[in-house]
Length: 130
Image (tube, helix red, strand yellow):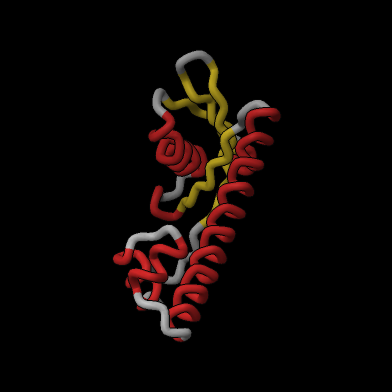
């Protein structure tokens, strides 16, 4: 990019009927897009035209305005999904430890599977997983 730093602009987009209205306050510019997929490039083009700079010198970070209750629910959903991933990883670690302990105590794959309610194939996977 020839040593020129790229300017970063925040674009705020919200639905207005079937269109996305886009405001770019730092550039004193506004535009619209028909599709959500077009918001970033329309904002970049708008800033470049407004400030008379090449589009390649403009970076856009889009923030979508949605109703507060919807955003709050989405944030809760994301936190719960992350917690579930963490819990699942911890559960998998514990399962591997249990299987390895049972195998070390002399249980066969079939016995371990029967006791834990797993298939012998799953016990084998857990015993050899990293």
